Image (tube, rainbow, N blue to C red):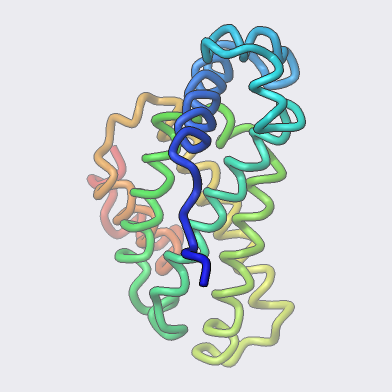
Length: 196
């Protein structure tokens, strides 16, 4: 009987090196402007080694997207359906930790990647919609409008937070996102000092 082995450590190390080099370059320029040769030089590998691991630049991007979405999926699975509408602060605390970790490496890629943002929004909406429909007796179109509004606001709040240098703590951002999602503008108006 064959023993099942994990991924080769050399492969894992090389892929990690390529992704770190990609993160550095994507912080300096658009993904469209990064060449394989430039990425290989930054990773201190040759082009052939790069192609042994990835078919191109966008294969690296896709792997990062898949990893982010996989982590988001695991996070959402850790909550029961009713918690998705009752325990928003804890959900956003954990979501902020995930996003903050990826922003350290892939900030501009995360913020400007509409495909990734759309994937994440769909995951959040699909997991949250049934809870909203059940809890508040909403029709699905009403729940979809509510989710669209909230998810658009969440994206822009995280984006602004990142672009402003993440001055507020992740815990503070999590709390504020939770307030906005559960209480909307009224939540802001009832505690204006929290928003300055």
